[in-house]
Image 1 (cartoon, rainbow, N blue to C red):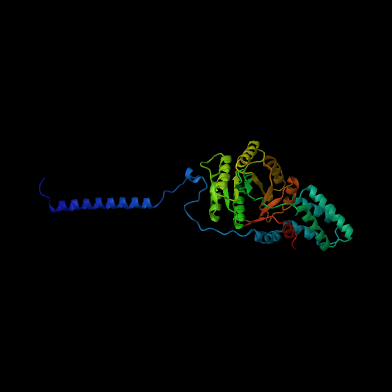
Image 2: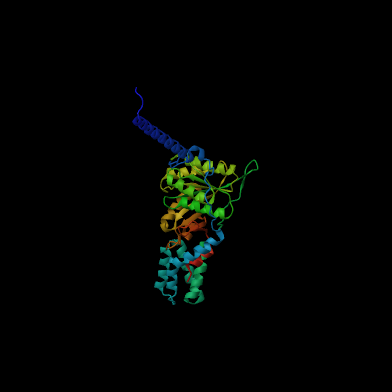
Amino acid sequence: MGPMTGQDFVLYGSILLVVVALALTLVLTKRRRGDTPPVDTSPFPSSDTTDGSPSPQTPTLERPEAAGTRFQRLKARLSRSGAIGNRLLAILARGDLREEDWEEIEETLLMADIGLGPTTELMDHLRTEAKVLGTSDPTQIRDVLRCELLELVDPKMDRSLHLDAVVGDDGSQQPASILVVGVNGAGKTTTVGKIARVLVAEDYRVVLGAADTFRAAAVEQLATWGERVGVEVVKPQREGADPASVAFEAVAHGDRTDADVVLVDTAGRLQNKSHLMDELGKIKRVMSRTAPVREVLLVLDATTGQNGLRQAEVFSHAVDVTGIVLTKLDGSAKGGIVIAVQRELGVPVKFVGLGEGADDLAPFDPEGFVEAILAT
């Protein structure tokens, strides 16, 4: 090989510069990849994040609205919609009520899904009081209507959540566990998240269990609710995992971490599918191995009316429902479902949802409810 010429030096120099440039590019790319953790696109977490441990990221936590002020705000919204009350009061305002007016009142009550039995009782009492008072004055009849509706809503029912710690055989305190059930589309997952916010506002330490294992979206949604208020969420290891095992681990994790309350979300199910209803019974039994289930809350869509009563009856037989959560109550002419479902099951409405906001769920207040629907 002969001596290198100037052109050879230029050629070799250019090649060397290209090699160096490629090497620097690879090094910088590798460093960037090393600084950024790989993104987990799986809809369910890997096994090392299924024990309810908090995410390494620390989101800005929200402070939920206190339970004491919620219903006052929601009552104003309910009174503005006033679907039942507006029609009733319009009839009563006519004064000197005739038979067709009484029939219209009865029809309004039935259309509001109060139910045939309670409506008949209410009408009998209204007519009797009108005769006793010897008047058809709308103001007096309205006062009687208010008292009779309040009696039907039954303010004496215990609407509190039973959240006292359970004392184990060894003397240790175990968390109160709550199972949330309902049909598809009733809003269970959202309701679980909103109840968690109510409890956090009252300074309870809460753990959520994502036992709706067949919908990745439900798991992700519940995780988002938890992150917003700093609540741990126990998730399934894989899609389609046994929901009872997730519920069990949620209660066990709550016990290990000294949580006050464990809220368990479940998959929506049709009330006419017996095997799915049997699964709810299994979930409740498995949860009870660690601590007794203190509450079983049934989420009902207020707009479903009488169909909601049939749903409630089947769920109650399967898991001994202890309380009702009524969603979508605002703007509905079906507010009488409060009376009907309590009469049917003998269990109280404990929460009502009036709106899409994160804090648009409130403990049910019978007096406030009747005031709102009869607001003038």
